[in-house]
Image (cartoon, rainbow, N blue to C red; front, top):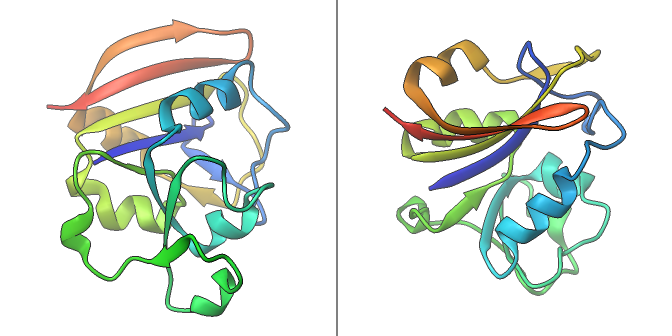
Amino acid sequence: MKAILACDPKGGIGKNNGLPWDRLDGDLKRFKQLTDGQRLVMGSNTWKSLPVKPLPNRLHWVMTSDPSCIKGYNDVTQLLNPALLTEDVWCIGGATLFKQQYDRIHELHLSVTYQIYDCDTYIDLDQVYKDFKVESRTEHSDHAYEVLTRK
């Protein structure tokens, strides 16, 4: 499984079920390029936070104990079989799903902001850097984009 996330230097990924920053230079464009035509798995809060539902040209799986949150979207399914979470599926968040699927993730695309934000949701960034090797890093005006693989 692959994952794609953005965080601040302390591992902050969210505030009030949304992103704590307005936008990151090129981050949404990169997200679209990487996930276009792909299968996405996300938690219900991530689903609720999407500005457009469903995201075009992607298959969405929402991990939730409350299927009513996805009612009315025919091409969105509740993922029932964790064995389907293969390497060609993208985990796009949030923190709970990322933590639950952490051991299955073999490749992580991480945008790390230079600024620290007021967040209420975090990933353990120190643990990520212990378990993953940075394969590439590209500096942008407001963040660094890293591709990491499991050690």
